[in-house]
Image 1 (cartoon, chains in turn brown, cyan):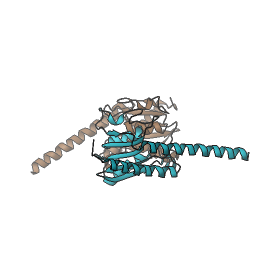
Image 2 (cartoon, chains in turn red, yellow):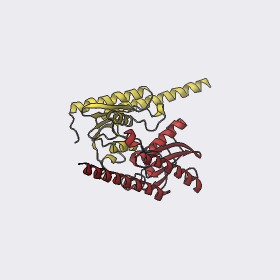
Image 3 (cartoon, rainbow over the protein chains, first blue to last red):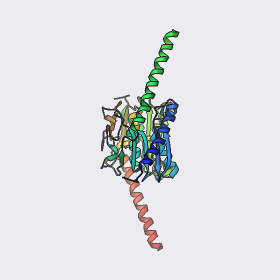
Image 4 (cartoon, each protein chain N blue to C red):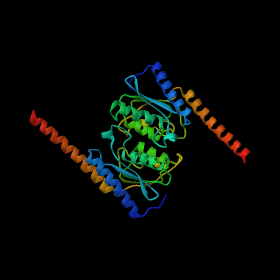
Length: 169
Length: 169
């Protein structure tokens, strides 16, 4: 199970990831957030910034992991835990596996692009040099609601913009 | 086939990727290099810098892709070609797929971690929103020789260091 965390710790760290997700939403980015925990401390935080930075690598958990690399002065993070509000994609599963993170706790499943349980089980592949303990569905409802509300607001804003344009013409 | 390149162009761009690989080797990094090509021009270059920068994301093709993102001011790279001396890993296959790169040309296969043909065929998964044209084995022998020579030199240096230590004791 990697390092054992209490239910209270799991809840606390996922709430911190949710806080990061809300920061992304406030900036008009898809609201996904993440934190990396090492020996009980948060050593990396991130929220999705892909559109704003126009950089394909700027997923929440990717930012949190590379921040943890800098904080700890090492590209390897053995024994670390990652908390992320949405199931990681292929790219992020790749960096998680390579950094030797011990445990991944995630919120909502991503049926279209999730590479941890939905489309692939990349973190548990025994052919690779490291396997990760996967803990899905942590505060999943809250993470999903945040995403749904965001996409509803985007649709409404598009609709309103279109209506205003039609009126102006 | 994405944008059509001539055999001469393919050879030229892979030679540029090999040049990047040699830079990594000169710095004591595993010699892997990459370039991203857009409309016939190189818009991103990278060589493996993982150890030196202690950052898990610093694979050759990852650096080249995020440089191309900056150059073109967009996290999407539709129609672009990637040239890389070694078969991409899971993380790099993930960013390649997400940026909508059209074609990947690679040199040596990576039987232990390759995610394009060896362990997975992530770039051709029809469940994902984009598929990439894969061109394996371009200047494969040269890429493989570079890697083999590097690892042989590392082993010899370790052996020499051990012998010197034994002599000193």
